[in-house]
Length: 167
Ligand SMILES: C[S@@+](CC[C@H](N)C(=O)[O-])C[C@H]1O[C@@H](n2cnc3c(N)ncnc32)[C@H](O)[C@@H]1O
Ligand SMILES: [Zn+2]
Image (tube, rainbow, N blue to C red; front, side, top):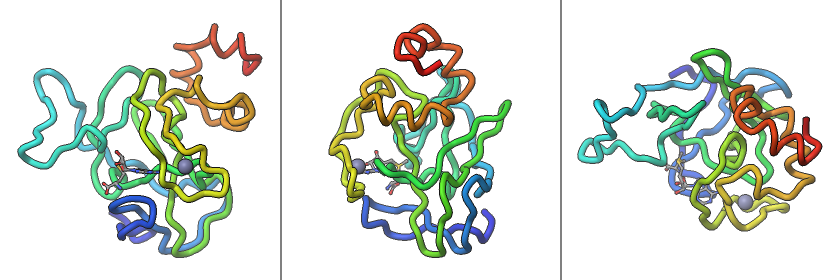
């Protein structure tokens, strides 16, 4: 783990990650730490504290995230997003981030068919629910997030995105 972010108790939920230095809009905050791919041969080991909600789901895979990235909370007005680049992923600032700000992403990007649950992000524009599905977001938010979609997600959902006028 580098010293640019740290894990602290979050007003959103449990633990979150917080900026220890400022970041500029568009700046890569850090490469996301992946422990391993979760497969039938290497399943999650709950007895060791491994949790499904500490996983990411890129391009049909399941990967267990390491520290500190497994503690990134969701916000309906996130200051960061996940950039996928070949087999690596990065947390990237989507606006300037000040020291001590919690670093958040919107979990509804690059996902379909997830479970919905109540959101406690506290943002003025909180939608109240983490719907777990990009296509269930309001169209205005889908438009706002269009440039943040991963290439693999756009490839997999080209028809639906075209129908919405997003590509
Ligand atoms: C990747 S973990 C984030 C870190 C988590 N706070 C922790 O302490 O490990 C995802 C889990 O955090 C919680 N969470 C994240 N964002 C939330 C939000 N906006 N509202 C409510 N719970 C949230 C949910 O329990 C979710 O399953
Ligand atoms: Zn919210």
